Image 1 (cartoon, rainbow, N blue to C red):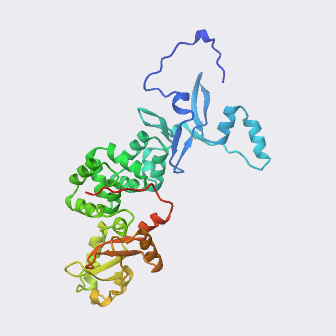
Image 2 (tube, one colour):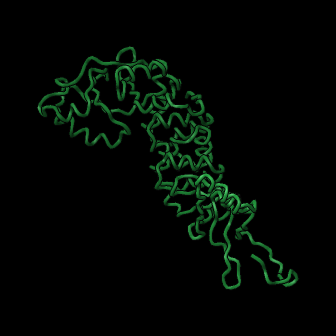
Image 3 (cartoon, rainbow, N blue to C red):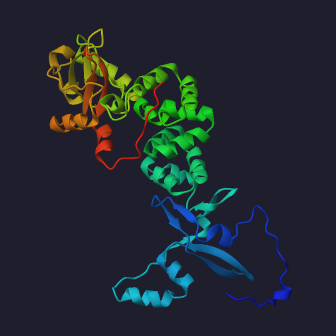
Length: 352
């Protein structure tokens, strides 16, 4: 695109703080592509003439943009055609791009921010991890409480700690309360001691006690892997009553595979699956249908022992008991899968 004006005819222009500059703020910068749940790079920009002005109409995030900037788009396209590859025109209309925040010009969204919030938490976490800390924190702050809690669980420990540390204390407390206690304990264990204690003091007392109990265990043990959120009922109640109670209690529990049966001292007596509960005679008691030949773990058991037990006995979850057979918590298959897959950065929990 060429100008018909002489350089002397061009009036000097001083950019304001509100201006987005094509080269400084857009070219070579990252864009969150919420439709593909990924971060892409702006390789070129497309300008068109409109009423005597050069108007930015799209950004190019594809290979053509790189080749065009190098001045070899035609040659590059011919080269790829030799391999029967047609280079696509990866253009994103400027209509769908907006600054992440007025003062942040290094990233833009290809769709309204609500679409990012509607992605799977794992995808949101990947996007947050791909951008700068400031931009990631800004994206995270816009999430609703439930999505924020789920997304935080998917982030790397150092990113989790950074976000929680920089967040308003009240919102950080709300998010921690929304999380399962085992995941909350993982995150709090990575924070500075004073910050961790302050958050524990600011959340619901019962939630704080559950988290503190888990913080007492080393991360690579059954006690460190377990959650103390589970459903347990007395042996003498009828199946019909257990089902009604389950309907009320299940909303507060993240993952439910089994119903545990305990005595008044919380000692583990038996277990039954949800299927067994639903198919049982409503008039029978839990003691009539529970399985008593249980596989259990001790809180100090190594994570390798935990993984071996879950794999050997094909369990969705396994209970953790103390020396008196008191039910302390359960380790779920999901928890141990995180250990089997390539690990995140190692955590070192701080005890309180």
